[in-house]
Image (cartoon, rainbow, N blue to C red; front, side, top):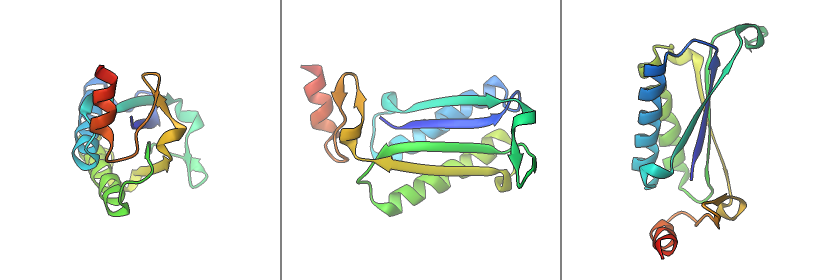
Length: 133
């Protein structure tokens, strides 16, 4: 259901760090938003160093954009962003000053997974059960 895109400078995150970060993001999202871990998607997009700028100068940030279904309480979304930012810095070794996490949302009915429109938050159990039949 959720999609996280981690954008970083090419080669700045070794495979083992990506593995750990993807696992951390999955665990955090599943815990806070009550989604089965198998539905959390994490993608790494690496950009050549010469294409990354911060404040108009070359930089090496870790930028994490997440998408979730609208309807989760704002306090949960804030907690989610903070937890992912902390995990990203700890896991990657990138200083927290160079990590940015943005959680965007839209109506569940704006997304399709497994050929079905996603359920609103709180209706996951029914959605999952209907998919098994």
